Image (cartoon, rainbow, N blue to C red; front, top):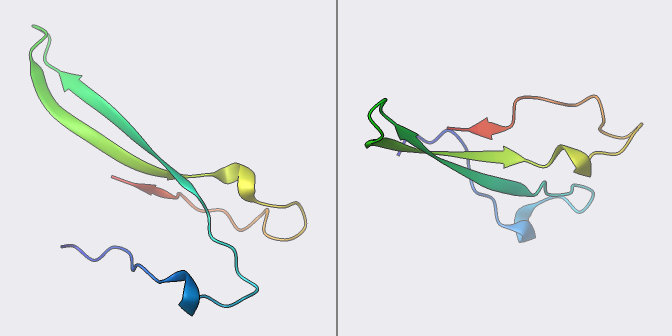
Length: 65
């Protein structure tokens, strides 16, 4: 495991912090002849959960490949 992130139980999170929901996006990459080459998956964070004036400008590239 590459350990790019750390899973923290909600019980250990500070009470003033909110979790950000995410969506898995899956793609099938094909060769020019139509045969399946590989599967790709991404975990994308919901950007719409931010609030103006609170954490709106605290953005980053929340994508896991």
